[in-house]
Length: 612
Image (cartoon, rainbow, N blue to C red; front, side, top):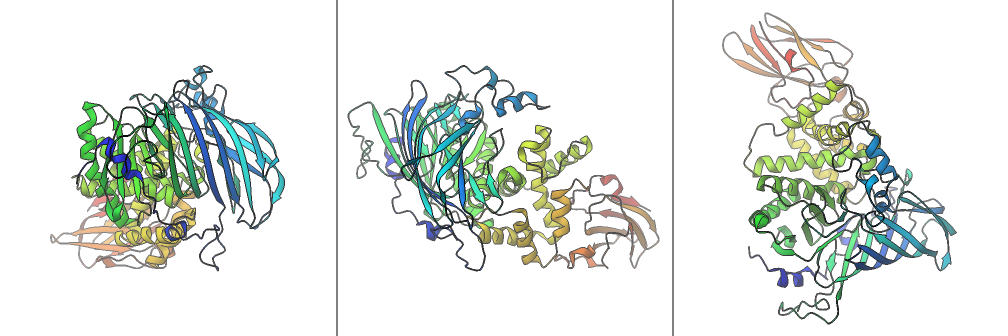
């Protein structure tokens, strides 16, 4: 596939004829569900913003017009905005939490507390009106509280006009200026962003360091910046000719003056991100279904080869996730060097780029996979972070195993080991814990990534791998653009498998109950099994006979009210309340092993095998 130069590529940023919001989603333009009987609703936002960026002092002036549609059945007397950059100030909740948590993140630690006035981040709202009337507003840490001039009735739209001023913080967490690899601007969480209001009410947590939740809408953004800078991120570029790139010929015809205004539009997204640097190389590569993949990275000979090799791999990733989750609905996606590690955003990701190729491919696979679970399904990450990080880790881990040459039987063993260490530490908290309320950073990471991943890999053990694949596709088809909850993935799996799974969601996500089954005794042709842990599970067991033959058995859990597809010999159900189970065979037993696949997260495998 041809790689296009930095100059000519900017022409191809334009995809004016993008799919309409209605055709891209199952949500109509008014934000209500396309199914009249579903009762589902969500709010809708339309942003129009003009930003003037000063690359010398890292300050920017902005205007924002926000049309907010209240699709809820409730009358709204207040609205709330997130002002994320305010977290990067001494004394903020992020700063204090970073310095007082038991195991501080090395990326933050005490760094925020030491920022000077010219290094902090901020968003200051200078004026705000509702339909032309001034409104009362107050800022507390990273939240702007607005008392409305007039309540917003159900089904009604209102227009907010705002002027604001921002300062880009020194790079500390996700956002900032001059990151460790020299990228000038990583502009994430940079604008006043309307908070989500849904069936649970307002979601207005301060930005303490974890994840995000947002309202879907359309963005029209103009960014004026020094003409030497190259931009990329969310949305389709509308004006390549105006910024000096000839649409017909690809020639450079820079207009007079010191700045250029880049005009982007993004349909039906719940965030808007951009990055900029004067040394970006900009390549494209064609992906599945006509999607243009963009790659922006520093003009650094030490990383160039890896970033070129990454491009066909990213196209392969896109096709893989399309197949196993659902179709990516936009016409472009950008992989951008920036930020402080890897972080997903609408239609793009920011990653650090000075990596070995395996690491570069791995972080890209993970962040690209987030597009499905965070930007298209978009669970509330603050409350259900495991559904985003865990599911993303599951599908990207599958890709890396199948396509990057690992080809191991269980590619998730590392996640199981991490989970077992967490259990042993005594520091585990339920997956229902708010992302900011974990006592330890490490406990959060293991819970969100590893235990969240195991929810799906272990579900393969419970309902079968093919059923998990079907469940993921159904989950995406039924709940993309709808902010699903944990019950929704459970119901998707139940509908494709016919197996009851309330017990599974309850014990795995809402408690810290553990799984521990063991072989208690072998007596002739009878194997006595015991349940030691509180969490119930069905049992796969391999029996080796004294005559040298073997036989696989499957013991369903009674509360499943069904069985997974299997070629093993089916035995009677095991009711959870019974602590033991007698497995009778037709031959004398020599040895047994519970769960040879090791997909069941049994916390003590020492008692899973026994010999007579």
